[in-house]
Image (cartoon, rainbow, N blue to C red; front, side, top):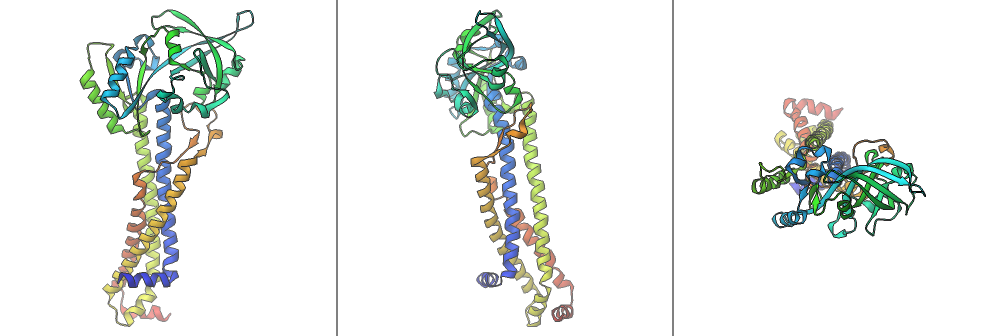
Length: 424
């Protein structure tokens, strides 16, 4: 019978073409929107992860309590040994050490006197050791506006807006003034190698990026780091897995009596990021759910109207002796076939559009001017396993359900009424 129904749908385009187009369109939008929401929320999280938070972060207990103040006097010591231990125990993550710092950037004139000054927030990363992956992780090559990436010690980068404000040009020397790990005042000279633009005001207003070894010398932090960041190798945050890793580490190495003992926190355990991770989960779920329900109602009504329009055909089939139950079942089977065909086509198109957005992205940097939060300047989708089957609910279930409800009317009406509709 399935072969007979397929042949009928193929030959009678009025019964298959428009319904399949409607189903495919609804499924395509559902799949694409889910991939878009997943990608946008995930990219927003990953942007914060790459710069400051990591998927998991290891700090000293005292540093963790005051992490918003960036207390480098409470930094972890013997960083190399700790990273080696983390790499052995948690090989699924990539580990790197970072130092966040604040200071005053001083620009001297030809006489060595101060020409311009400005406060800066600093990021000490592995600029010269490319094997650590920090340059690619922060996408510095894409953010580069003028000059080049640092290639030698004492070379650093400033945000483009900050460099212009200070009147600095590529190759100029400036001095970083700050507080060392031991509390003393320190001054360290850098050469401006390049400028960067991240598209986020909080970063572009006044930031300095330098190699971590230079900052260790400047702040007297030999073999010390404020934070050790761990990143999942697939590049995406897994909250459940991160919590398990943090719990395992803290159970094995945690020492509640030692304020300088290491403690690991997952992204969701780091201050306001925990609220954001939960909010991202809820937004992704509710937005996708609302869109699925909306598409389901559209396809449900399409199936309902399609069934009502066929009462004349039903009257003819009953007139030649076909049973009502058989007519009802064949209408359901036809809607099932239409739903499957439309869902497959819609899923293919939805995944195709999502892949294009995932591959090339949508530049919204113009709309991000003045933003104080770290949102991605390029929106990208993210295709997950869910996108391969999420369209089946609105595409098949809703279509079949609409036909089921419309077909019930066949049993509630008299055969004579159906004949009369056929005559008209």
